[in-house]
Amino acid sequence: MSTVQRIAKSILPATWFERVRESSSRWMIQCTKCKSERSVWSVGGIRLGAKSSGKRIAARCATCGGIVSARVYYRTDTNDAK
Image (cartoon, rainbow, N blue to C red):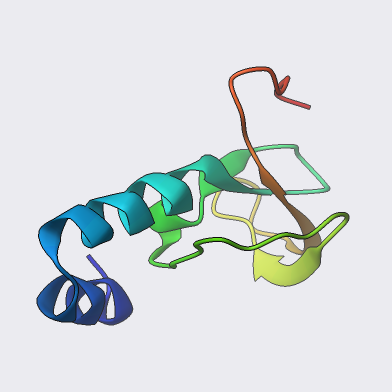
């Protein structure tokens, strides 16, 4: 757990923290080069209640090692792994 995640856990009620963890696990970061994906939670981040379409962030891909403009999106059960 990252420092930000530990702080959130220490100050939020357990039910709220679980909601933050669940939401952050559904937000995905996808490498635009090799298409590998990781959740925002798995890379140490927190994202709750965010709404964005077409958001990109600069990130280093753990799979291919490239620095890319990674795609950030919310994965629902109906999303395809693109």
